[in-house]
Structures are given as C-alpha cells and as structure tokens.
Image 1 (cartoon, rainbow, N blue to C red):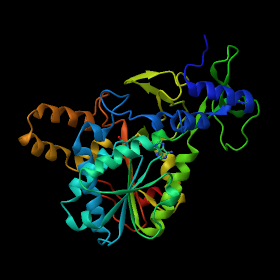
Image 2 (image 1 turned 90 degrees about the vertical axis):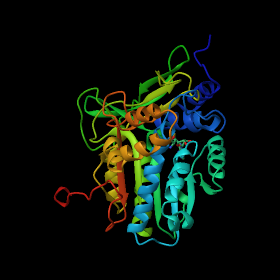
Image 3 (image 1 turned 30 degrees about the vertical axis):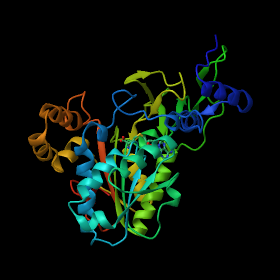
Image 4 (image 1 turned 30 degrees about the horizontal axis):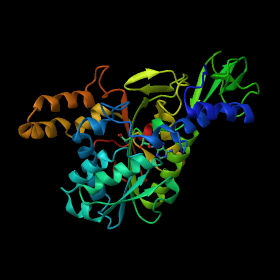
Length: 367
Ligand code: SAH
C-alpha cells in the first residue's frame, strides 16, 4: 500500500522526485493553500463539527469587544472620514459581523468605514460574503496585502492569521545550521530530513540539535503593514497563540477533528499551524516604522475591554446563561484548558498615536 495517503501527498512526492526536497514553508503553503487540494481552499474547518474552534466562533462577545475597540481608536484618531477596516484571514466572517454590529454604537464610524478582507480561500470568501450580507454590508476582497488601500487610515484585525502562515526550520549540527526539509523515505513516504549544505545567513549559534523556527512571510507581511500604518495612519490588533520571547524549538502542529495528528500525514486534510513569535513580529513592525505596544494576554485584553460586563448584559436575556459563563471561561480563563494565557494580543500603531483601548504605550526606557 502506498504511504501517500492523499492526492496532495502524491503530488508533493512527484514534486520532490523531480525537484528535490521541499522546504517546510513550501510544504506548509501547499498543504494549506494548494489551489485544488489545500486545506483552507476546499472546506470550512471551523466549529464543533469541523477540526478546530476559534475565539469568534466561541462567543459573539469576542468580535463585539474588538469592534468597539476599533471604534474608539477611530475617535482617538480624530474620526477620519475615509477609513478602511481590514481583516486578515477572516474565516467565516463571524468576527467582522460581530464587530460591525457593536460598532453601530458609534454610528458615524459604522457609516463611514469600508470593509476589506485579505483571504485566499474561495470557500471562506463565500462564507464571509454571506455573513456580511445578513447585515446588508459588503466588503472588498484581496488575495494579498499588496492591493489594500494606500490613501486612507487602516484599522486592521487579525485573529489566528499569523499562526497559519508558513514557517521554515533550521537544526543545529556541529557549528552550522541545516534547514529541515520534506523529502522521501526509502519506502516512498514523506519524511523530514536535513539539508546537506548548511544555511549561511543565520547570525547566531545554538546548542547541538536545537531547532530555529522562523516565518519569513509573517515578518514580511508585518513589516509592510507597519510601513502602511506609519504612512497612512491607523492601528492593528493581532491575536494569536504564541510566545512572548523568541526561543528554540519546533512548534509546528497539525490538528484534525479537534485532535493532534502527525504533521506530514494527510497533507491537505489537516490544519497545520505554528506558534507565533510575537517578539520577532514586534521587531518587524518597528522596522516598518510603526510602534509595537506591549503584548497582553488575551485574558487581560478581554477583561480590560469589559468581557464580564458584556456577559452580564447578555445573560439577562439568555435562555441558557450558563453557556455564556462557559464561553467567557474559555476565552478569558487562565487555566491550561482555556485560551486566556496561551493566546496573546499585540497592538501596532502609527507613531504618535494613543494605543487602542486596553493596550499601553511602550516603556521608553526599554527601547
Ligand atoms: N480569523 C478567523 C479564521 C482563522 S483561520 C477566526 O478567528 O475564526 C486562518 C484564516 O486565514 C482562514 O480564513 C484562511 O483561509 C486564511 N489564510 C490562511 N493563509 C492565508 C494567506 N496566506 N493569505 C490570506 N489568508 C490566509
């Protein structure tokens, strides 16, 4: 029996046989984004019946609090007449739907904003359009950030976007780093091996066997969005699971039906993500000329934005108030099963701006 369990695995094996091993970022980009077989290109993976669940799908409160945070940020910017509200990787469009509903509390903002989505999956684009149509709203879609507006301030949201962007990995052997590549094992299955030729451009050492992981695409997107924010004005709030300090280690993981599975099995049929290195993202934002405000845990951001207050209001009208309590614990709880501490929130702004609600100015003594 073949070790190649999916059509995409067969295509990858053929590619490796003709061109040589694939870098992990190429593997991940194909597994998630191959036009015919890519994981996000063919399905809606969210929810109890899908492979995983994200914060906006757990409770409407998540998107509502972020929508209000953007509205206040807009007011603090002097209420510019033309503003683009941008979401990177909007999934089912749930976050934006909830954010726009909450933004109606500040009608001038709700009326003036135009929605822009950056999304590569045709299936999810359709879901996003359907979600906004429920509230008679429209959006413009972009395959990459290159075509986003260049003449007005941007207010950008990204939830679990950066963790889906491809990573490369390098392993320390003796005095050099060798890239980890996906090749073929003797039986013809996909297997991870090391490049023979060392990578020449990594300017630091590490202990024997250490794995250095980096997401060049994430850093590039962050730097270029920071350049746009610095030039056009505006802010970004990015929320993701990840670490505050850069360190060594392999964080690549695959999930199917709410369970971890091996990363190389069933490419195209499983979700693949990596932890977000927020320290590196902050440096990329600063290189682009924007300000990176100190990272918060998702728990503290949601608490500062009033998750408990909003939950009490919703519970008064709810048939099952216990469900709202459980959702709040999942989003903002601090034990291992909850998202509150694992997920972090980062705000990036144009220089000279007040940080979005909940966030603080960086300590000037630390920069
Ligand atoms: N923000 C949503 C979805 C997170 S899943 C939520 O919280 O529920 C990741 C999203 O990013 C999906 O919409 C996926 O299609 C999109 N995506 C993945 N890689 C992308 C890329 N390179 N460019 C644009 N969107 C991408």
